[in-house]
Amino acid sequence: MATTVDDIKNEYPIPVYRFVVTLGDEQMAFSEVSGLDIGVETITYKDGLGRKHMPGQKSDVNITLKRGVVRKKSQFFDWINQISLNLIDKKDMTVSLTNETGDEPLVTWTITNAFPKKLTAPSFNGSSNEVAVETLEMMADNVTIAFN
Image (cartoon, rainbow, N blue to C red; front, side, top):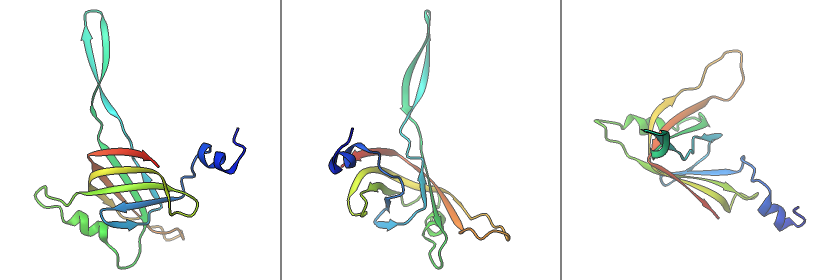
């Protein structure tokens, strides 16, 4: 059982609401990041004795970013609009859980060669006062995790 402040910092789970996202060279604010999945496809191999399962190629990395729509900023629209003849500016991205002050990364997910594949506008509802949230779906080559 954790008895000191240092034990609590090292042994208790990190809250998910303190995170920092860097996309390319720009640090951006998001309300939600999901899809930082690491997995493999499975291969079923059948021999005379029965089925065998083996790991295959890495699964696709599909990341979803959500953030509030703000005036005069359209980085996502500009980025997805640049896609032409299968050419796009792929970007590396990091997502870091931070300490309570937000200045020290504790766990960092590094995503390589991400590119946008879908930009979804907010849902509009005249009887709601919720924030307008846009969603960007991206595909990437790889996700790695570093514990600091």
